[in-house]
Length: 184
Image 1: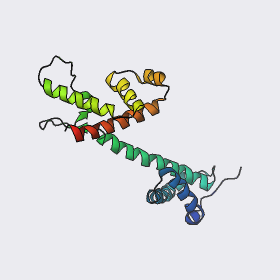
Image 2: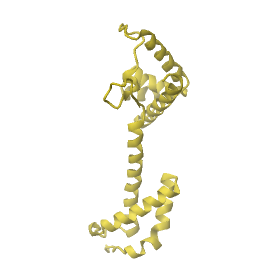
Image 3: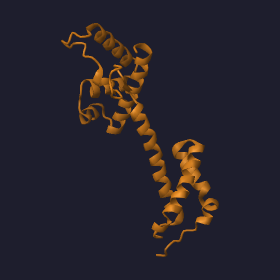
Image 4: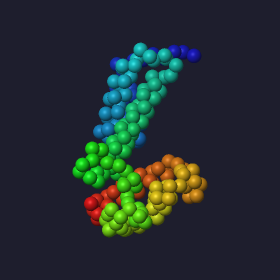
């Protein structure tokens, strides 16, 4: 099998349109797609010494672009994860906040500290949960409130783990928005 050679001087003319179309179909934003193609060319130049010639030049560039697209979504998701539903409950706390479910007071708790506040917050959460789409609310209740395992929830509702975590994430985001409007 013939070894392929890189010709970086021709990349823009030969592959830019193809790579742009590939990227824009994955990220649905022309500006981001342009940036990803540019990053692909730059990464290709930087790693040209590692090119073995087993794959065609375009195939090699597409594989770099695929990694750039994945990195793009990882970066977005890591930012969302940090800001997702974290909140501070007291001004004397040094932490950046905890997940909503970890701070929600149990309305049936025997801890009499803030019973009225606990009941009001519990009612506000229940009201916000009732505003979620039915399946999303069910997934959130089973996984987060009732503490069912991922496998059990997936089997019960005939969904896959990815769907479960997307629904839980969306529910948390919606609940935080609802609580910010109606409680905090």
